Amino acid sequence: MDTANNNPRQTHDYTSKDTNNSSNYQPVKRELNYIQAIGAELQKAEQLAAAVPEQIGMFTVKTANRTIKEAALRPNPDSLWLSLWYEGEVCCLFSDSNLGKSIYAVQIATSIAEKQRVLYFDFELSDKQFQLRYSDEKGNLNQFPDNLYRVEINRESLDTTNFEEVVIENIEQTALQTGAKVLIIDNLTYLCIASEKGDAAGLLMFRLMALKKKYGLSILVLAHTPKRCLSNPITQNDLAGSKKLYNFFDSVFAIGKSAKDSDLRYIKQLKVRYGNYTYDADNVIVSAIEKTGSFLQFVNIGYATEKEHLKEPSDKDLSQETENIKQLAGQGKSIREIAKELNISKSKVGRILKM
Image (cartoon, rainbow, N blue to C red; front, side):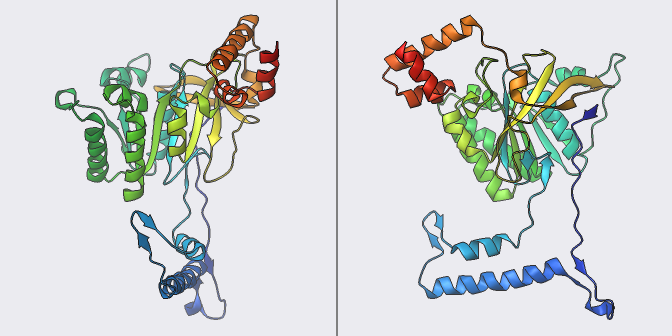
């Protein structure tokens, strides 16, 4: 069995050699960048000549050609974890309670910290709970990479009067003063409960997106789901507050509990900006949570369709679903709205309403 914590980076040889004259060896990548830079400057000059301003209020305006030429001067983002999270992304990992989100997130952080500094904002566990989780039966402690820093809230200096503002400011200062570019926040739900504002999640995500752009950060945010039925596939609607939050994220993946074996978990990819949909419903990662020495982790045991790990709906489930459909219809919701909210087909909603 393989642990899912290896993510080798691809390397490319951009050098082009002239065998007749060693002084003419030139990196092809540098030549391309030089040409693209000239092209971008020409595009900029053409835009100015056309009397189209670059900045109008909060908006930056560029031609599509100039946009891609300037973007091509920057390196393509590397994968931080499989094809689930890339550099420069604000990513979300969500699941129901007690399925191992934090365990998987620490595993991801540990892998990345082998190469660069990582800040793990832990709003879930105390330091003692963290220590016990990463100790073996004899009390031997796990040895993490020196680049992995765990951050927790100092309760004595906690300011609840303007909580989300203070939290974001402190996250920003911690990233700046440590020089870390990779942040993991465990978890969004805690921060929203601690805030007294009803739209705290949206405000926090808006500010996190601004930090990402300002400093070039990569941020993984953990979130809970409401209690979900194991007969249904995981969708974006399972993310608490999904209608407001989902669009904030560049990428999203989730952990589900296998109905076939309660000790198994599956990991499903739900949203992608870079890379490909590698781990969708037809190819979820199937894992077991095991302790290897003193390190608790997800161990990859294979791949499967999500359907293989869903529960066959019982009569009770079907009865509850019918009741939910009729209740939503009674509230004046359309068939389309009901289908979207309950994650079922419109035809099924129509059939039940005709019964």
